[in-house]
Length: 422
Image (cartoon, rainbow, N blue to C red):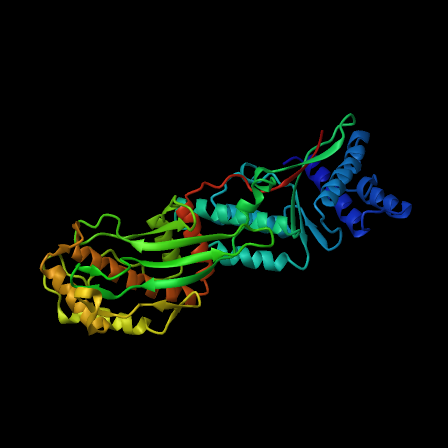
């Protein structure tokens, strides 16, 4: 960056800072003081500024005032930075955690205003939600999350990333909003504040159908009731097998918006694995590799069953994201769907027997009973992992990662307001 550009941007910062500190109305003394600080031949920021540049700084102020008035943005409380402060923090996050190599290709902001009382909160949100990436895919996801956090805070009048363009003498002052800030898109791009509900893991084995009584998967719902500019959304997350023919398969998570037929898609396995690894936790092994799951056709050993009984016992009474896990009424269910034996141990024994005998699902012969069993055991391991993620204080970040991973939406440029001529 040239020395001239640095002087020009720092002068714009000075004008914005002093103008807003004066609540958008300078006295003659205040205006003279700003011009002295900006253009003094000895100590000024931009001592040799041509007349067209001096006019430009006043036009930029007019453009800023127009933007703030139109959007109802308060004039007081702003702290401005150029390269350091809030701007430096956002740029560092983009480079270090979001895979941005050229800052202008992500966000052409030149100066950043932030409400002083909100600066530490915004930084804490970024640090909590944007995890240390271990792959290029995770960096892309992180960039989407950073963009969403910025959009949310711009919408709520807490953040102003400004791109500065020179306004010629024959141009009128104006401003433009980046695509993610356009009226038709901003509610779609704001960061959701997700809560969860209905954490379900049905452990009722149906001996007539050789599968679980109601739900073959683990499932839970993430939802945001909306408000404060956000669009309401509810998404059902399922962890399940997508084939079902083989007795052992690696299940995946999938998201489906409620009230809409189209699924978001499967969550990228590597992104979830890398998140877990970054927290220092163990990933859930595939049923084909789990040491407590025998190969198809082999006998389930007492020690293997004891492992799954112990895992269930440890999960009983725990919560995920503050919500209890609904295991239904564990047991064995026969003809008429009445319980013949109660308890998880009985259900596990019956499911293991169906797997050992190579049975198929009665109502869907293309699917294996062993697949139904081992997919559910995989789900129990994920429930355990959910509780561990919560204990690390990273549940909100995990839920948001799940949302972005299912969306598979490549993030665009970061949000900004361009001050320019028209």
